[in-house]
Length: 621
Image 1: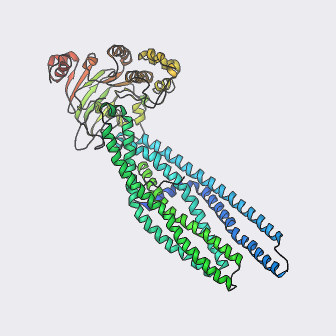
Image 2: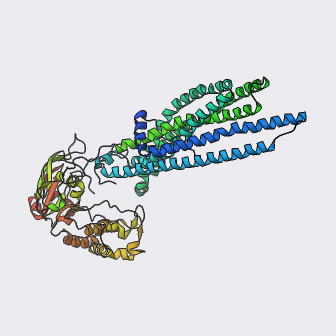
């Protein structure tokens, strides 16, 4: 494809033009608008409020049954102690019926707690996965509604990171956060109530541990946030670099640029490593510090409980139960502290997803679009068209031309003249900055983009095939086509012969990069696809550049049949392919400087003559 713009170094500036080509890892930055993002995330969870309420209720029941265990166990401990005392006095012993009753009651309680917890986890997991499904669906739909200009300025790896990394982060962390928040808060509240019934004094000591814990949490979170931000930044760069290098692996090899690419990767990878280990370290050190503070409180509780037991103010069974409650009490506090960190990760990932979903979409769709069926005359008119990828630098300047229905128009000129840009404007991949373009007397902006593009068939220099069979790739031009129609199109494009020589023929599966067929064969398949679509307006952008001369002659003959009666635009550098064009536009710096038939332009001995001579006579321009 011809490049109608100045060259820009990759990874330095966005490219212009082109038709488009276990433990949770806290790998995202701090959200810029934490409250707003959490509010937006909550609105996405609104449809699940009944399920969330059910999960919360189940979680509360699970906690209640779990909390009741130590209190009931204390009766068993008291019975063992009292039985031992009775045995020493010769007044009896341990009542085994009471112990059996306590054991059976505990088994029933813990089983009920497990059942409620399992059901709650199933509901929360289903909600988080449905939310991920919805996000991916919305992102996929959004990609198709974004203007081409967006992808000119954003690396493909960055878009992929939002579809994969960020959505996965939301799914995984949301699952953990929701379960932990509900369970932890219910556990803390329930345990405090039960501990108060045992000993208000010891409960006060246990609760005093909380401020110290949250003080540590706030300090750790503050230290970790800047490292999360750096980590996400360089994670995006690493993803983008890997995607870019893999897609151009052959070019990297051809120009012996492996060392340079490795150096660039290592630079980004070192920064990612540096920020990642720091963020993960601060995240992982949180739990040991929390455990340290909890153990200090635990020691104080044991000493105080022993003192109170010697004074007869508390029973041995209650001390045992209280110590278990303290242990259970510390765990949800630690989980809440961990959730604070995870919530930052979730909010940052969600913010990136919401930012993408809120990107400005293609504008200018009419409320009552003209119907493609209303157009019978496929003449094309450009009136004073101006356009620039950069508003300060126009690529097309005051371009005007009238193409009658069925005309074969060639557009030639040096690289950067604006040839491919004209086609992009015609198909509304971009909208003009000034002037207008019409098809059949109707402004292209009167049609919906899909309606307008249904007129066109396109064969580009840069071929695009997807992972699937050859039959499926050709049928992409018209999904309702039968196998016989697909084969007929392949024959018309002179692709049938080589397809039959491939293993599996039309059922052969192309790999992801279509490297199991040659570049010329890929071009023939895209031409066959265009034949099958049977378009009213045909666009050929260096369509035969990757085939040999003999095949090119055959394709040109086939193209003559396809072009007959259709308006067509042919962009070509090899001027021998456009001699039979009805009209040739010669472009330079965004303007038409010459137009006419081939022979007419040769006789003028102007710019076209120089271009033609440089190809066939070796004359310098």
